[in-house]
Amino acid sequence: MSGAVYGGDEVGALVFDIGHNTVRAGYAGEDSPKVDIPSTIGIWLDAEDDVAQTRYNIGLACNTCLEIGAIPKDHPILLTEPPWITPPKREEMAELMFEKYNVPAVYLAKNASLAAFANGRPTCLVVDSGATHTSAVPVHDGYVLTQAVVKSPVGGDYLSSQCRTYLTERGIELVPPSIVAYKELTKPDDPPIWKRRNIPPNLTDSWYNYMIKEVMQDFQASVLQVSDVSYDEEVVKTMPANHYEFPNGFHRDFGVERFKIPEPLFNPTTGAKAGIQPILGVGSLVTTSVGMCDIDIRPAMYGSVVVTGGNSSLQGFTERLNRDLAAKTPPSMRLKIISAPGASERRFGAWTGGSILSSLGSFQQLWVSKQEYEESGKVVVQSKCL
Image 1 (cartoon, rainbow, N blue to C red):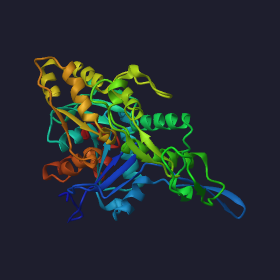
Image 2 (image 1 turned 45 degrees about the vertical axis):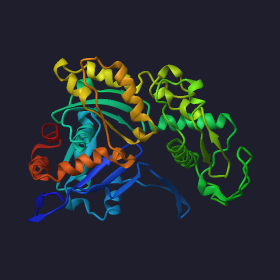
Image 3 (image 1 turned 30 degrees about the horizontal axis):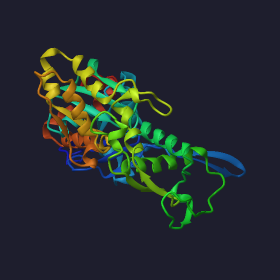
Image 4 (image 1 turned 60 degrees about the vertical axis):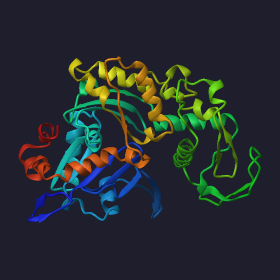
């Protein structure tokens, strides 16, 4: 637990890692977050006295605190933020925490620095592949070198959209598990035999798309794999296929396509089926970022490449990155890829770093207190949260 003292009592700090796909939250000093919930806003259209009313499932911080059995005003909160966040957004977050949730103290920390801290590497290059983007972020002595941050707008959501496009083009019906009442066992590639559940008729397209996205996330985690070397169809044809069953009972083997779909992450020239077109592969992100760093710290960057983020759990991601960088790294540089062995450790990298950091006794003087906020205003986070 954190050693922070408020009102004479030792109080555990809360750590929030707010991502595009999920929010990880829990108590400082613990090994893993208490909750990992979707970063999604639900909307209900209610009728009261014949008047339509809209309800929003927002207040994410408050709802998440309730999930883990905490009251916001009783705990200091450490929040993660991306390296490219703007000063106005940082101030807005501080204002929200103090004014709406009345927290006693807050700290805003860069997620790349926390991932580096979790891996015991104060100086490293953090490759973070999440839902909406993949980035290469150099960290030196715990501080992000913002001038050398390079990112690509592709990640887990990109793969989900490519999977959906591929499957739809082949006439494979995609349905959410929640609308399947029952299904029968069929032979591979045979049309599925299933019955639709009676569901409310007013469900929106956004709800349907969200549920299909969850199916695609399961598909990509179960089926997709990054080729060890640059994609070669003749080579991947010799690789074993993966069998997958969809919620409605349709099932088949996936062979070449399971390597072809994620290839643009590393080799943009292979082209994407639809949507965002990658410009830089993951290996090029790293070499570009290192090239923008001071020449004196480049060996340290190549010597500690930390891989984190949920999308990095894709089969073969780390191995392919290692091969690509080995071919691009100058001979005088020593290359070392560092990645947590488990998928959950990679997903929770920034949260784990925040948990360790905010539980240290030496960190307690770094909190931005409510008193400091009231005296100096919201700009105080710019000087205290580096």
